[in-house]
Length: 463
Ligand code: PLZ
Image 1 (cartoon, helix red, strand yellow):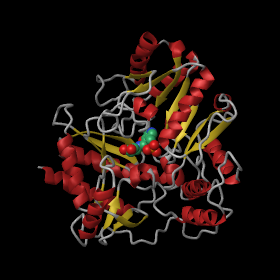
Image 2 (tube, helix red, strand yellow):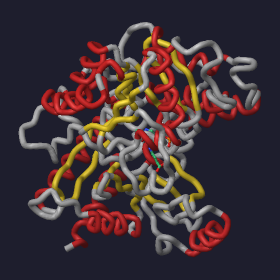
Image 3 (tube, protein in one colour):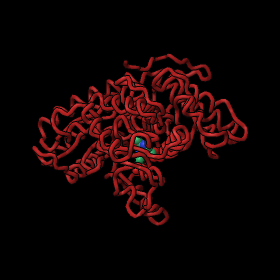
Image 4 (cartoon, protein in one colour):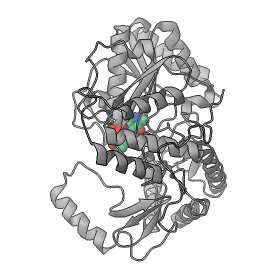
């Protein structure tokens, strides 16, 4: 079953929008100084004097405006955005419907605390989550501020429901930077190093990673490899939940072999554990379906969402089976800002944009264009070991030619060359050897083509 989203399924009632996807910024790559330019460099100096060292910077370019497929910096350079602020600005920056709804809401009220005196925007977002997340069972949602907070709450809910403690996660998995989610996250540097001790009762097992697994290993076999360890080392009866990104994000855009997710989900059903899909990076039209789980018809018990849900405002959610979601006692879940009214207004604008512009369809088209070009690139440059992903969530993994040995240096060099040439690309992967492409789904096709051209030039420059 594939649950593609339907254009126009939800009509715009509140706002008269004539120009939904039409960003007013010129959609062009334009370099008028070196990148970074002098103004960005000066701001970077100010930044370094007051911002804690622990907060990193991928590209020391200060942004002044952004929209559609471009970021315009303080020196007047217009950069093509293949990052979307780490898969957040899927509807584009300052998308018309997001701006209009946020402006309307911010002028009426900015905060009451939903736990004190509620408001309808929160309810409307939960209704949308109910409708859009996989499965047509009865659902409930709870709203939070960040992805990590959503994952923490999914674990709380699963533990309250099952009255068990163990949490099963996967190699290369990423779930956040809070104490529990650091424990769930695989990679030490930079996320965990020196920040322990970490939360207990977290067990990591092998992921299905077709590029690195034994040739021909099926999804079912990879699931059996993982679940055998769970049964022997944890005990099925102790497992509260299995938490997995259906396509891994920070860990390297790892797409598991078909059947892997379904087998894990079935095991959870058979063993009374909760199957949690962390769709924080892969969700909300990014992969060409509303959620990555839709692609294989997998229906998780709980889904965590954030990032793309609210067009850039901080909002996150846990959505799932009513009987699981309602396990915690009244007052057991919450937070001062969770489901803030302005963030909810933004989410309603973002969801409306995704439906009106059929951004699922757009993500599939972007995926076709990117994948075709990258596969061609891989046939030219043997440092590209793998091209993978789905929809507008695509990556290349760089290895020493003919081996599985990660080539982080080449990856960093390509990213650096792209940045200097006006293309924002991000890297990821446990070994830092994956270039990931996450353009806004409203990226005009001529910019997509031009961005891929910049990437090709960067590979040519490696030789
Ligand atoms: N789960 C699948 O991708 C956030 C992290 C950036 P927050 N990924 C970007 C960084 O270096 O901090 C993410 C994710 C998945 C959870 C999270 C956490 O979401 O909103 O960053 O807390």
